[in-house]
Image 1: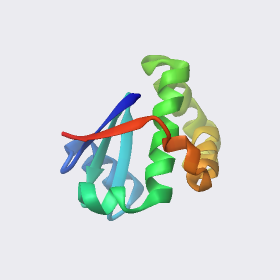
Image 2: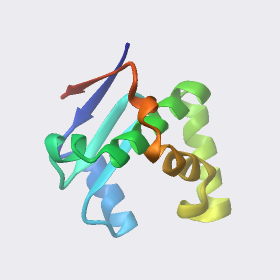
Image 3: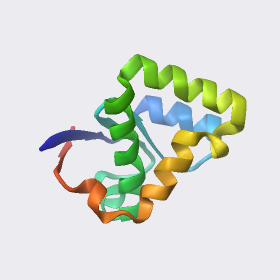
Image 4: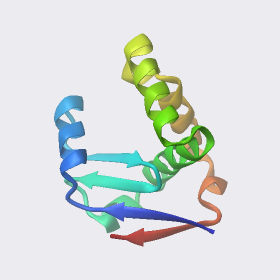
Length: 108
């Protein structure tokens, strides 16, 4: 079982929302999903969104924290946010119900 923490009202996610010009944002750092302008319950009821963010949790696990952040930034600079390979992979996981198997979500 992998513990994934979900934190509402995150200032980090608020910064990401401003950068992305998005009204609602979820962002992952390690095993924590940070939310802006969305509640834990609203987020958890949006299965594709949850799966997308869990894909990022697995990416952090695969590459380790610092390496993943560096690779993510390089990808974003090189290809832009939307074409970043980590975002493409996460979008592809949005329809995979198995990705959340073994995940224990904990509201922070």
